[in-house]
Image (cartoon, rainbow, N blue to C red):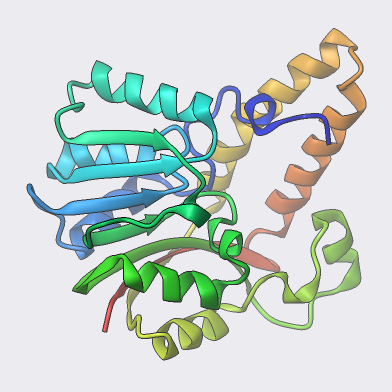
Length: 244
């Protein structure tokens, strides 16, 4: 693929269909308050953690491998007068070895859990970064039921074992020492807000009729397939779980 995330998410603030209302509810459930520390893995442009810092007064340390996103997030933090408690750095999260433990680990990026090989490995890694009674906030897709029809899998570019069902995911989290406090499923409206800026960015490339136009159309088709599967075959789930 020649199209980069910078192309696809040119106008996007969020990289998953998680609403501000859900982020606020998750923050309340995690008992965010001034002085608490949040590690934001795969922070992207920083929107979720900047919201938490602004509303709840928490301290944020965020990491992402994309230098452009990190620069954007830090400039946005400065614009919001949050630089005194929000810092983002460019680093591969797989190589991150924090020297401290955090009150909260947040993983809301695109398939960030799979960066560690699989979700089981990711959960073990997250636990090493948390205080004994810390909280994990994790966004991951989940199938509604299995088996998944081949005609659904093909346009999504996925296989059945790409994701767990909600019940499988909850069981895995609890077996990994993360009893679930609550989970939030993204609504169709959340998905609409997520895909619209992507469509705008891709249509710009198509209208320019440059060499990336065909690929941009495939990206649109892929996101439309994701949108059409929402609520029928899969959901995006935001999990809030307490380390045990």
